[in-house]
Length: 331
Image (cartoon, rainbow, N blue to C red):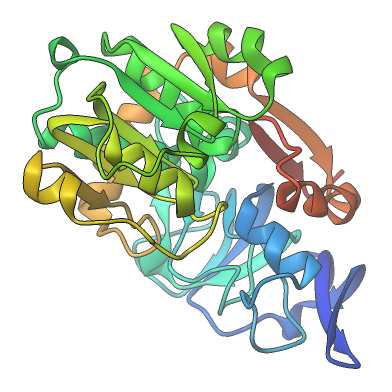
Protein backbone atom coordinates (compact mmCIF):
# COMPACT_ATOMS: atom_id res chain seq x y z
CA UNK A 1 0.00 0.00 0.00
CA UNK A 2 1.33 3.41 -0.98
CA UNK A 3 2.49 5.57 1.91
CA UNK A 4 1.28 8.72 0.15
CA UNK A 5 -1.93 9.81 -1.54
CA UNK A 6 -3.16 12.66 -3.74
CA UNK A 7 -5.72 15.10 -2.41
CA UNK A 8 -7.22 18.53 -2.88
CA UNK A 9 -5.63 20.44 -0.02
CA UNK A 10 -6.96 23.70 1.40
CA UNK A 11 -4.56 26.02 3.18
CA UNK A 12 -4.69 29.64 4.27
CA UNK A 13 -2.41 32.44 3.14
CA UNK A 14 -2.96 36.03 4.25
CA UNK A 15 -6.40 35.10 5.54
CA UNK A 16 -7.51 33.64 2.19
CA UNK A 17 -8.18 30.02 1.24
CA UNK A 18 -5.70 28.53 -1.22
CA UNK A 19 -6.59 25.21 -2.87
CA UNK A 20 -4.12 22.93 -4.64
CA UNK A 21 -3.56 19.34 -5.66
CA UNK A 22 -1.09 17.85 -3.18
CA UNK A 23 0.74 14.61 -2.40
CA UNK A 24 0.31 13.82 1.30
CA UNK A 25 1.65 11.14 3.67
CA UNK A 26 -0.85 8.67 5.13
CA UNK A 27 -0.01 9.82 8.65
CA UNK A 28 -1.44 13.24 7.77
CA UNK A 29 -4.94 11.75 7.83
CA UNK A 30 -7.07 12.49 10.92
CA UNK A 31 -8.05 9.88 13.46
CA UNK A 32 -10.69 7.31 12.59
CA UNK A 33 -11.61 3.64 12.80
CA UNK A 34 -11.60 2.88 9.09
CA UNK A 35 -9.16 3.65 6.28
CA UNK A 36 -10.91 3.83 2.91
CA UNK A 37 -9.47 3.60 -0.58
CA UNK A 38 -11.68 6.27 -2.15
CA UNK A 39 -12.87 5.43 -5.66
CA UNK A 40 -15.07 8.46 -6.28
CA UNK A 41 -16.20 11.65 -4.62
CA UNK A 42 -18.43 14.48 -5.82
CA UNK A 43 -18.68 18.23 -6.06
CA UNK A 44 -21.57 20.00 -4.36
CA UNK A 45 -22.46 23.62 -3.62
CA UNK A 46 -20.95 23.22 -0.15
CA UNK A 47 -17.70 21.95 -1.69
CA UNK A 48 -17.67 24.98 -3.97
CA UNK A 49 -17.91 27.26 -0.94
CA UNK A 50 -15.12 25.37 0.83
CA UNK A 51 -12.68 25.24 -2.10
CA UNK A 52 -13.13 28.88 -3.08
CA UNK A 53 -13.25 30.12 0.50
CA UNK A 54 -16.50 31.94 -0.30
CA UNK A 55 -18.26 30.42 2.71
CA UNK A 56 -17.18 29.55 6.25
CA UNK A 57 -17.41 25.82 5.63
CA UNK A 58 -13.87 25.00 6.80
CA UNK A 59 -12.50 26.51 9.99
CA UNK A 60 -9.25 24.55 10.55
CA UNK A 61 -6.38 24.29 8.06
CA UNK A 62 -4.79 22.46 6.33
CA UNK A 63 -7.90 20.56 5.24
CA UNK A 64 -9.15 18.11 2.59
CA UNK A 65 -12.70 18.95 1.39
CA UNK A 66 -15.36 16.68 -0.12
CA UNK A 67 -18.64 15.89 1.64
CA UNK A 68 -19.17 12.56 -0.19
CA UNK A 69 -17.11 9.46 -0.84
CA UNK A 70 -17.44 5.87 -2.01
CA UNK A 71 -14.77 3.21 -2.07
CA UNK A 72 -13.37 0.08 -0.44
CA UNK A 73 -12.18 -0.50 3.13
CA UNK A 74 -8.40 -0.93 3.35
CA UNK A 75 -8.00 -1.20 7.14
CA UNK A 76 -10.47 -1.24 10.03
CA UNK A 77 -10.45 -1.49 13.80
CA UNK A 78 -14.28 -1.37 13.74
CA UNK A 79 -15.60 -4.96 13.76
CA UNK A 80 -18.49 -4.00 11.47
CA UNK A 81 -16.11 -3.32 8.59
CA UNK A 82 -13.40 -5.46 7.03
CA UNK A 83 -10.93 -4.93 4.18
CA UNK A 84 -12.63 -5.14 0.83
CA UNK A 85 -16.06 -3.94 2.02
CA UNK A 86 -17.61 -1.50 -0.42
CA UNK A 87 -18.86 1.58 1.43
CA UNK A 88 -20.48 4.96 0.91
CA UNK A 89 -20.39 8.04 3.12
CA UNK A 90 -22.35 11.29 3.05
CA UNK A 91 -22.75 13.86 5.80
CA UNK A 92 -21.64 13.65 9.45
CA UNK A 93 -19.50 16.78 9.04
CA UNK A 94 -17.08 15.09 6.65
CA UNK A 95 -15.69 17.72 4.29
CA UNK A 96 -16.59 20.41 6.84
CA UNK A 97 -14.94 19.51 10.16
CA UNK A 98 -13.36 16.14 9.29
CA UNK A 99 -11.14 15.60 6.23
CA UNK A 100 -13.28 14.59 3.28
CA UNK A 101 -13.50 12.59 0.10
CA UNK A 102 -11.62 14.65 -2.49
CA UNK A 103 -8.60 12.43 -1.95
CA UNK A 104 -7.38 8.94 -2.75
CA UNK A 105 -7.54 7.97 0.93
CA UNK A 106 -9.85 8.86 3.81
CA UNK A 107 -9.81 7.83 7.46
CA UNK A 108 -13.26 8.06 9.04
CA UNK A 109 -15.41 6.71 11.85
CA UNK A 110 -17.12 3.39 11.21
CA UNK A 111 -20.39 4.90 12.46
CA UNK A 112 -20.46 7.18 9.42
CA UNK A 113 -20.31 4.43 6.80
CA UNK A 114 -23.04 2.53 5.02
CA UNK A 115 -22.63 -0.51 2.77
CA UNK A 116 -22.67 0.38 -0.91
CA UNK A 117 -26.34 -0.23 -1.84
CA UNK A 118 -26.93 -3.40 -3.85
CA UNK A 119 -27.16 -2.69 -7.55
CA UNK A 120 -25.08 0.50 -7.45
CA UNK A 121 -21.47 1.01 -8.46
CA UNK A 122 -19.29 3.45 -6.54
CA UNK A 123 -19.62 5.90 -9.42
CA UNK A 124 -23.41 5.62 -9.46
CA UNK A 125 -23.56 6.07 -5.68
CA UNK A 126 -21.58 9.28 -6.01
CA UNK A 127 -23.73 10.40 -8.94
CA UNK A 128 -26.47 10.27 -6.32
CA UNK A 129 -24.35 11.51 -3.40
CA UNK A 130 -25.53 14.01 -0.83
CA UNK A 131 -27.64 15.82 -3.44
CA UNK A 132 -29.59 12.72 -4.45
CA UNK A 133 -29.87 11.53 -0.86
CA UNK A 134 -31.28 14.93 0.11
CA UNK A 135 -33.72 14.76 -2.82
CA UNK A 136 -34.96 11.37 -1.60
CA UNK A 137 -35.44 12.68 1.94
CA UNK A 138 -37.45 15.59 0.53
CA UNK A 139 -39.66 13.27 -1.54
CA UNK A 140 -40.24 11.08 1.51
CA UNK A 141 -41.15 14.17 3.56
CA UNK A 142 -43.84 15.16 1.05
CA UNK A 143 -45.23 11.62 1.08
CA UNK A 144 -45.26 11.48 4.88
CA UNK A 145 -47.13 14.79 4.99
CA UNK A 146 -49.86 13.37 2.75
CA UNK A 147 -48.94 15.03 -0.55
CA UNK A 148 -50.20 12.38 -2.97
CA UNK A 149 -50.06 12.79 -6.79
CA UNK A 150 -53.83 13.37 -6.96
CA UNK A 151 -53.47 16.44 -4.70
CA UNK A 152 -51.96 18.45 -7.54
CA UNK A 153 -48.70 19.75 -8.94
CA UNK A 154 -45.33 19.61 -7.20
CA UNK A 155 -42.74 22.24 -8.08
CA UNK A 156 -38.97 21.85 -7.74
CA UNK A 157 -36.89 25.03 -7.51
CA UNK A 158 -33.27 25.17 -8.56
CA UNK A 159 -34.36 22.30 -10.76
CA UNK A 160 -31.20 21.93 -12.85
CA UNK A 161 -28.93 21.55 -9.83
CA UNK A 162 -27.95 18.32 -8.12
CA UNK A 163 -30.92 17.98 -5.75
CA UNK A 164 -33.42 19.12 -8.36
CA UNK A 165 -32.07 16.83 -11.06
CA UNK A 166 -32.61 13.79 -8.83
CA UNK A 167 -35.91 14.96 -7.30
CA UNK A 168 -37.61 15.40 -10.68
CA UNK A 169 -37.32 11.77 -11.87
CA UNK A 170 -38.09 10.43 -8.39
CA UNK A 171 -41.32 12.43 -8.26
CA UNK A 172 -42.26 11.65 -11.86
CA UNK A 173 -41.83 7.93 -11.24
CA UNK A 174 -44.28 8.18 -8.33
CA UNK A 175 -46.89 9.74 -10.62
CA UNK A 176 -46.64 13.40 -9.64
CA UNK A 177 -47.02 16.15 -12.22
CA UNK A 178 -43.67 17.87 -11.73
CA UNK A 179 -43.01 21.50 -12.59
CA UNK A 180 -39.34 22.55 -12.77
CA UNK A 181 -38.37 26.12 -11.85
CA UNK A 182 -35.06 27.24 -13.33
CA UNK A 183 -33.28 30.40 -14.34
CA UNK A 184 -31.65 28.66 -17.29
CA UNK A 185 -34.13 28.47 -20.15
CA UNK A 186 -31.64 26.58 -22.33
CA UNK A 187 -31.93 23.57 -20.00
CA UNK A 188 -35.65 23.03 -20.58
CA UNK A 189 -35.06 19.98 -22.85
CA UNK A 190 -32.82 18.44 -20.16
CA UNK A 191 -35.41 19.02 -17.43
CA UNK A 192 -38.19 17.54 -19.54
CA UNK A 193 -36.08 14.43 -20.25
CA UNK A 194 -35.74 13.99 -16.49
CA UNK A 195 -39.53 13.99 -16.14
CA UNK A 196 -40.66 17.60 -15.76
CA UNK A 197 -44.09 18.18 -17.32
CA UNK A 198 -43.54 21.95 -17.38
CA UNK A 199 -40.66 24.37 -16.89
CA UNK A 200 -41.22 27.82 -15.39
CA UNK A 201 -38.77 30.71 -14.86
CA UNK A 202 -37.34 31.13 -11.38
CA UNK A 203 -38.51 34.76 -11.40
CA UNK A 204 -42.01 33.37 -10.84
CA UNK A 205 -40.93 32.98 -7.20
CA UNK A 206 -37.92 35.26 -6.77
CA UNK A 207 -39.92 38.34 -7.83
CA UNK A 208 -43.25 37.82 -6.05
CA UNK A 209 -45.95 40.44 -5.81
CA UNK A 210 -46.53 42.48 -2.67
CA UNK A 211 -49.71 40.63 -1.69
CA UNK A 212 -49.26 38.33 1.32
CA UNK A 213 -50.88 35.47 -0.62
CA UNK A 214 -51.18 34.62 -4.31
CA UNK A 215 -53.30 32.18 -6.31
CA UNK A 216 -53.02 28.75 -4.75
CA UNK A 217 -51.35 26.37 -7.20
CA UNK A 218 -48.84 23.98 -5.65
CA UNK A 219 -49.74 20.92 -3.58
CA UNK A 220 -46.11 20.35 -2.75
CA UNK A 221 -42.68 21.81 -3.36
CA UNK A 222 -39.03 20.93 -2.98
CA UNK A 223 -37.07 24.15 -2.53
CA UNK A 224 -33.30 24.12 -2.97
CA UNK A 225 -32.92 27.91 -3.20
CA UNK A 226 -34.27 29.62 -0.07
CA UNK A 227 -34.35 33.40 0.27
CA UNK A 228 -36.93 35.29 -1.78
CA UNK A 229 -37.68 32.16 -3.79
CA UNK A 230 -38.93 30.37 -0.69
CA UNK A 231 -40.99 33.42 0.33
CA UNK A 232 -42.61 33.61 -3.10
CA UNK A 233 -43.20 29.88 -3.19
CA UNK A 234 -45.02 29.83 0.15
CA UNK A 235 -47.45 32.50 -1.07
CA UNK A 236 -48.67 30.23 -3.88
CA UNK A 237 -49.12 26.96 -1.98
CA UNK A 238 -52.49 25.23 -1.87
CA UNK A 239 -54.44 24.88 1.36
CA UNK A 240 -52.41 22.43 3.50
CA UNK A 241 -49.64 22.45 0.91
CA UNK A 242 -46.18 21.27 1.97
CA UNK A 243 -42.75 22.72 1.19
CA UNK A 244 -39.64 20.62 1.82
CA UNK A 245 -36.78 23.12 2.18
CA UNK A 246 -33.21 21.92 1.74
CA UNK A 247 -31.07 24.73 0.30
CA UNK A 248 -29.94 28.33 0.56
CA UNK A 249 -28.25 29.14 -2.74
CA UNK A 250 -30.56 32.16 -2.97
CA UNK A 251 -29.96 33.32 0.59
CA UNK A 252 -30.32 32.19 4.19
CA UNK A 253 -32.65 34.94 5.41
CA UNK A 254 -36.43 34.62 5.46
CA UNK A 255 -38.34 37.86 4.94
CA UNK A 256 -41.86 36.51 4.58
CA UNK A 257 -45.07 36.61 6.58
CA UNK A 258 -46.98 34.04 8.60
CA UNK A 259 -50.06 34.31 6.35
CA UNK A 260 -49.40 31.12 4.35
CA UNK A 261 -49.13 29.20 7.61
CA UNK A 262 -52.14 30.61 9.48
CA UNK A 263 -54.54 31.20 6.58
CA UNK A 264 -53.81 28.18 4.41
CA UNK A 265 -52.24 25.79 6.87
CA UNK A 266 -49.09 25.52 4.75
CA UNK A 267 -46.36 23.35 6.27
CA UNK A 268 -42.65 24.08 5.91
CA UNK A 269 -40.53 20.98 6.50
CA UNK A 270 -36.77 21.26 6.93
CA UNK A 271 -34.58 18.58 5.33
CA UNK A 272 -31.28 17.81 7.06
CA UNK A 273 -29.17 15.19 5.32
CA UNK A 274 -26.00 15.69 7.39
CA UNK A 275 -27.08 14.11 10.68
CA UNK A 276 -29.92 11.95 9.41
CA UNK A 277 -30.08 8.73 11.51
CA UNK A 278 -28.63 5.62 9.89
CA UNK A 279 -31.91 3.70 9.84
CA UNK A 280 -33.50 6.44 7.77
CA UNK A 281 -30.36 6.71 5.64
CA UNK A 282 -30.50 3.04 4.74
CA UNK A 283 -34.17 3.26 3.77
CA UNK A 284 -33.54 6.30 1.57
CA UNK A 285 -30.57 4.66 -0.16
CA UNK A 286 -32.53 1.47 -0.77
CA UNK A 287 -35.26 3.49 -2.50
CA UNK A 288 -32.72 5.42 -4.53
CA UNK A 289 -31.14 2.19 -5.75
CA UNK A 290 -34.58 0.85 -6.65
CA UNK A 291 -36.40 3.92 -7.99
CA UNK A 292 -33.80 5.98 -9.84
CA UNK A 293 -33.45 5.07 -13.51
CA UNK A 294 -29.73 4.40 -14.24
CA UNK A 295 -30.09 5.93 -17.70
CA UNK A 296 -31.44 9.18 -16.25
CA UNK A 297 -28.74 9.14 -13.57
CA UNK A 298 -26.13 8.90 -16.33
CA UNK A 299 -27.88 11.71 -18.23
CA UNK A 300 -27.50 14.12 -15.31
CA UNK A 301 -23.90 13.15 -14.42
CA UNK A 302 -20.47 14.24 -15.60
CA UNK A 303 -17.26 12.54 -14.41
CA UNK A 304 -14.06 14.56 -13.95
CA UNK A 305 -10.54 13.81 -12.66
CA UNK A 306 -9.40 15.04 -9.25
CA UNK A 307 -7.40 18.01 -10.57
CA UNK A 308 -10.43 19.45 -12.40
CA UNK A 309 -12.30 19.82 -9.13
CA UNK A 310 -10.31 22.99 -8.55
CA UNK A 311 -11.51 24.68 -11.74
CA UNK A 312 -15.11 23.48 -11.54
CA UNK A 313 -15.75 24.45 -7.89
CA UNK A 314 -16.36 28.17 -8.63
CA UNK A 315 -19.05 27.23 -11.17
CA UNK A 316 -21.32 26.14 -8.33
CA UNK A 317 -21.36 29.65 -6.91
CA UNK A 318 -22.37 31.05 -10.30
CA UNK A 319 -25.19 28.53 -10.71
CA UNK A 320 -23.44 27.24 -13.83
CA UNK A 321 -23.43 23.52 -13.01
CA UNK A 322 -26.00 21.15 -14.49
CA UNK A 323 -26.90 18.01 -12.56
CA UNK A 324 -24.23 16.02 -10.76
CA UNK A 325 -20.44 16.11 -10.89
CA UNK A 326 -18.60 12.91 -9.91
CA UNK A 327 -14.88 13.12 -9.18
CA UNK A 328 -12.75 10.09 -10.09
CA UNK A 329 -10.04 10.64 -7.49
CA UNK A 330 -7.59 8.21 -9.11
CA UNK A 331 -7.82 9.86 -12.54
